[in-house]
Length: 220
Length: 220
Image (cartoon, rainbow over all chains, first blue to last red; front, side, top):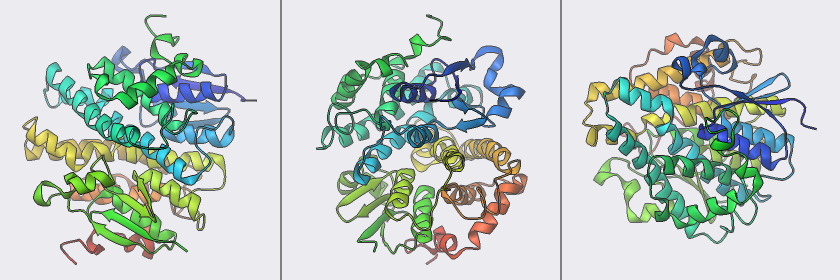
């Protein structure tokens, strides 16, 4: 029984996408509470939402009276609270590898390219659209080169990043590939990543978490 | 017994600093393998080190024949492998809070300000020193405002971020405060963070992990 789960989310947020995948993989029903990151200067900056998350970012997961922040911390919480099916391997080596890949994306790729950073580059640094897009592509490409090296040449890579069941690493890879495509990165340069993304999106849990299938997506 | 632990580190790396603190708190002896991030264009970019870490970042922890990457993944590995003393609380609420604070720093503050980003801003965006320093101060200040709100007004904050024993959150806060001071952020604006830093640095485990006490520090 999942109790009462509500996800403060934005359809195109890569970090919220990770949590949606994990909730779906765990088979947990949840209610989406949309936070529109662009409307009215950004609903994440409202006084009400700052009470929910002083970082003014999505996602936040509400579980009963608990507010859980930061996508990777939420994935760990889901794993501890609802262990089945596991999103981490049983062995410590594998767990460290999965967390290493997840963090390589969640720390060193995604935060450089999220909305608040692009807004700062535009407003404070007067950086034009082309230069901002090049910035995004640079950090994604650099990160993906490293991750491709970790995945492509490793005996424990299987259908997914670690073996043949999806893990937290895959919860991070798929949203990052979505972002990469959005900004025109050529994913075919990263065949291991591309193959894992394909295997993931064949699963209903990943498919249902896609941005364009969210209730707050303009295409719904 | 710790087996054979070796840390690829740079004295002033904030992420390596986190791992040094955790190793010390766990009472684990380790050998420092310095990677000079500035010498010869950056030793982290050498062919040899790219075999150690395709991300070309420190830290990496070598444990026997295992290579462990990403500071937060390494902290989790240490916690699982040597559970005592714990760096996470026993309850799931507290664990999520600690990981949320750790990730707020490790994902949303630090990566925006590390060396490779500042080098890109200088070389590709022709951003001057003053503007780069303002960039760093902006992201630290924004992050610290949020974390101060999480810490200052929360019943489970104690001498440390969560209660009266140091956790992964503190392993991240102390190095980030070091960085903040280095770039001229006024820490007195964040009294809860400042008080936690003071309590941490009074512990030998934190003190011995300071940049200026590392074997590769110019001051040693």
